[in-house]
Amino acid sequence: MPSAFHEVLFPLDIALKSAGGPERRTEIVTLGSGREERNARWAHSRRRYDAGYGVRTFEALSAVVAFFEERRGRLHGFRWRDRLDHASVATGAPGPFDQVIGAGDGVQTTFALAKTYGDLHAPYQRPIVKPVAGSVRVAVAGIEQTEGVAFSCDPTTGIVTFLSGYVPGAGASITAGFLFDVPVRFDTDYLEVDLTAFAAGAIPKIPLIEIKP
Image 1 (tube, helix red, strand yellow):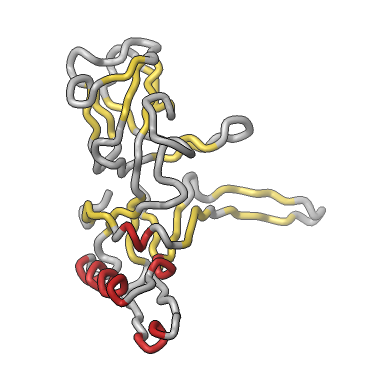
Image 2 (tube, rainbow, N blue to C red):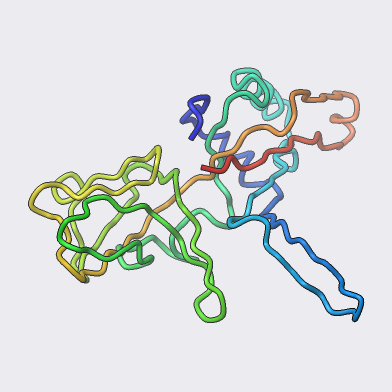
């Protein structure tokens, strides 16, 4: 991640009422026959959000302005909690067997957290780089490991490191469960605030865009 990143979470009560989701970039060429050739220009999706939908009070608006100013507009990134997609499992609490993140070889000690979408035609593996500290659970060969004893996880990168004496053996499946945030930045350097319109029920636009690792 760029150095200009603040490990701080956007106000959660506002984020939970936002709008947004993943964006893909697909290039489509229509041939003379009418058939198409399609090419994915991005290996990973990029998420966009509008936090304005969560601003319903003057206090919330003031909090966003203060947050915007501290980030210096688009300059500094920050954490964002996606209400729809912020855990290794669709529903319920994360468990140590939710996602496969690698296989041991008896030597490798570091593994990156990831979340897989789909399972049949073309599953997509998304890198998870901002796990929530203390939420990561890891298992090796079906046996849950203890954080701080068998492994550590860097909440700023999503890298799981196995400690001495606990390096996964050859062929051992490594799985993990976790909560995570999305690294984002403001997608504007100008935050327009119209208090007259706001009092009448208008919602200000607060665009955010994911920062790719």
